[in-house]
Length: 162
Image (cartoon, rainbow, N blue to C red; front, side):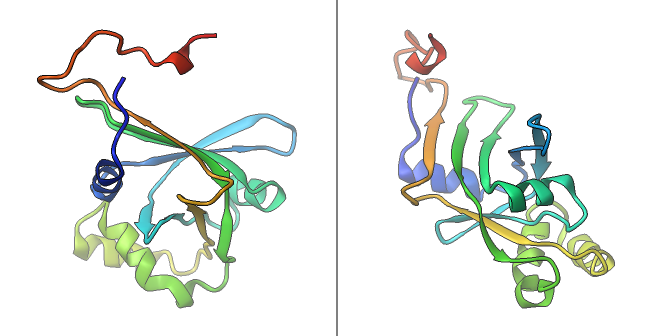
């Protein structure tokens, strides 16, 4: 199965509408996956859990995460990473990074609705979290289905086999 090039990864992650499905581990050891809005800022994948959310407590306790970003239509591009979360701003410092939060919101809803959403949730402190795409602790895998002109045989990647 073909991997995405660096340029294809950047283009895919910059496309609006894709959700990051972020996996953490609850304090009882059970896995938890939560879809969240995100944006890539430089070489950081940024997301914003709210202070009372279980995912925030999980990240504070254990900053290791798994993240999947994919699409429903061909060529079924996927970016999967495992990494360690950097807490760029803890909850309560929202004013320091609100322009980035507006940028995130505008990837998912029209601009006028995004501003209303951000302003309407200002009473709900959020953290600004990031996973560095190029960090030594980050494992990044990508793939897509073959496109026109590529050999469609052997599309199952070796990682699917025991």
